Length: 234
Image (cartoon, rainbow, N blue to C red):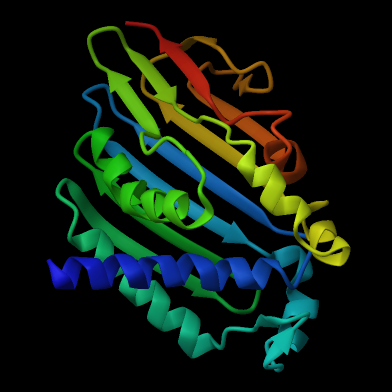
């Protein structure tokens, strides 16, 4: 039990390390990709892309801190990535775990295969619970669901206004960091997409994928949501 708690703590540190890098630049993207099979198994890839600010970051990485935020070293990030990988290995149904760290372009990734969509929730549940406890937020720990009988896939998300309050507690210069940041999700399926509930989502021409791109400010202020219900054909 102690080992699992330690892994969760290290996984949290990994997220904070990447987050601290985002505080050094206003151009970053979080990309969430899921390839789903008909039986509910599949693969997931999460990418933290800071390549648009790679020249600036190369200089920042030589410093100890910027605007009061500690700048992680390559060793810090590599160790945290390894710890995140080890954490994923403790979750039942998660396999083929891989990580990458590209310091030429400042792109970091974590990927894995899952036996069923419910396995993905276990990856983030403890992290979200810690976030809710620390920041007194109430984010839903269930992020994904899939019903193979009805071919219905859901990306779940419940907005909490406390995130907006936390945002406005930041200094004005720190808030500007999110102006050019974005979240993108790409979900690919074996069956054709019949409908999507999120009005900002776009269905690919071949009807086998759904793209959603939202600027970070809209998410923070609750103007847009990543929640989406995707109905697939049988």
